[in-house]
Image 1 (cartoon, rainbow, N blue to C red):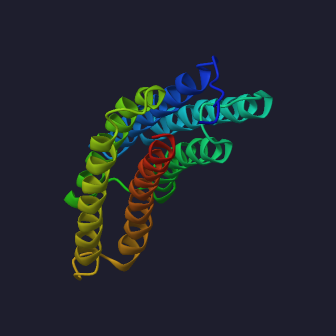
Image 2: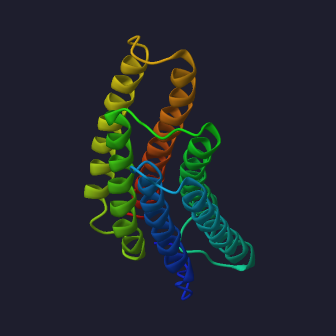
Length: 205
């Protein structure tokens, strides 16, 4: 059996856990943005700050990979996971920015369902990241993310059907379609994170 070097540096696991916690924060801010009476400029400002902090953590992961001789798992997988976690935050930031720029204050009920799915996905992603250290008990994570993503797909289709039902003005349809599409992209990105974790776990088993 070939000898496999194992790093003593545990900072990768900690950095991934921090990234996932930033997503929980971002999802909370996103939920505030769609809530009734939200101060959109103030909420958007906090989201930009949260996105910047998340970016800094992503850069820290990349710097750590570039300066490490031995990594806990494949370098390309580390880059992919860090990038996908960052993509989730970027997608949530885009939603908040669109709401601000389009001055949208009222949303179909299905939008709240999408936001709730994002919140739940970020929570269980944050719970899963520390388990990368042992690579154990992760299967329930990606199974649940897949289930939630399927639910998000259904919510997205229902939202589009509602938008094109004739109950909305043309300009409202255009604005809301952009927003719900960005929400769907965030959910898809969260599933991609789970898929990468699954691939890593299979390789390491």
